[in-house]
Image (cartoon, rainbow, N blue to C red; front, side):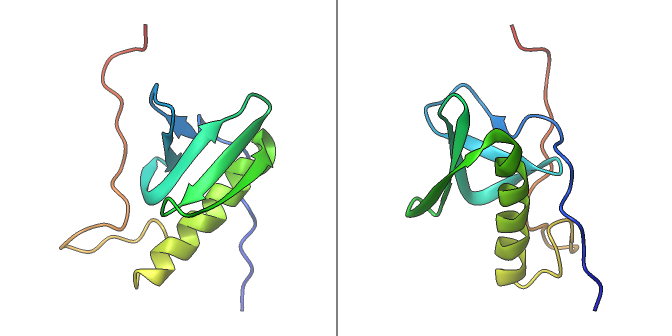
Length: 99
């Protein structure tokens, strides 16, 4: 059995100027995972029912682990897995630059 290391902090975790943000992991918007920016901490909420607060550094690792678990729960081998029918999490693209 191989063990995969947690990824190092990447780009922005939260997407959008909303009260509750969508969460982007490895360039993919994660279904049923939202977040709230609480200044020095980030809260991650799964399915609008279960949540926890993390330091900003730990939130990236927690979001990655949650995303992998959600993908596996949906029957995919991992977060980045795709089929011809549909990917687990759509790839996120930004249009233009933020003002």
